[in-house]
Image (cartoon, rainbow, N blue to C red; front, side):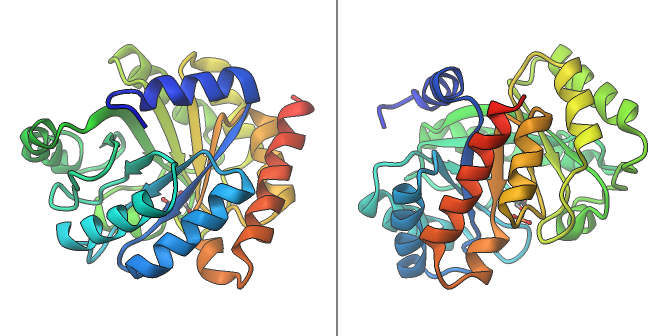
Length: 253
Ligand code: 1GP
């Protein structure tokens, strides 16, 4: 991946392929060797990028080792999904420079970003600015980031956050259902999609072809799965199934 070209790559893929898939690898749960193998199978299955990050226990060294291995084994762009400003790696292509919009603690809205900004600049990482909204049960990330997840029966509040983020200049919106939790419902995804004009990322709890299809059909542009690669013994088959679901969902939109 050429320097500074990840956003262009993503937008091009969205234009030509419709909804796409990204694979999330948590360096706290995955050794570099495992990460390399996962990335190879994910690439074969048709994933569009590898995201690297986790909420707890991820150091810069752990991130470096995982990113280096993935870069060595595949041609996929590696996008950091940092749980803290100390989990950045100079070997990655880009970073989701995210703000937890509905956190109750300003540290997670602008403080960690302030701490990380010069590191990102020094490492020459491409910045993909991301308005991050946590919903439903929220998962570990909501505990760590002092977030009261938005209730799933208030899609209009979620959409208002997303639109505000677009107006503030964010390039992408992420609806996070919480890792290992329940997928974001279709009615929430579709209202957000109808409200904003920037790409919509959806993740958290997507484990089956049908769930992936539902998310894409409702309007998710980028669908992220993480936990399923830890739960399956056939990563290629599982991700192929998810990606098939995404294509089917996009086609019935
Ligand atoms: C977590 O949305 C991602 O930040 C992925 O969630 O681990 O449930 O796939 P899962």
